[in-house]
Image (cartoon, rainbow, N blue to C red; front, top):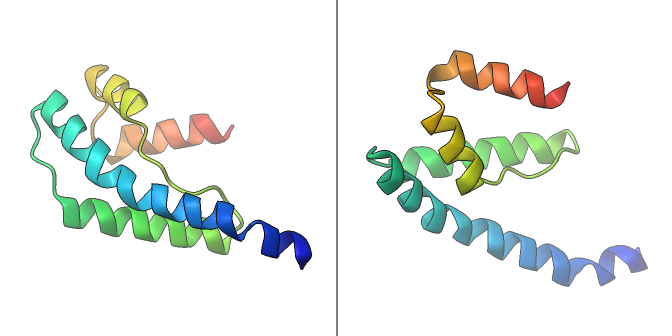
Length: 91
């Protein structure tokens, strides 16, 4: 339990960083792809994915601007291509 107590500042930093990355990265991505962002939908999706990751000991969800932009510019759209990327990443 001592190690858990010592890691609390790091956990708080990760929480703060997770809260600010959506308002920064989503507008930049929306401008780059000429798509209007729905912040409510983005925040709900991040919340669900992070809750599931926490329940199943996974990594937190983080929107990486460069990777998302590459995916969009390569023609990735829709749930089918997103699921294919997920399966490829997990393999």
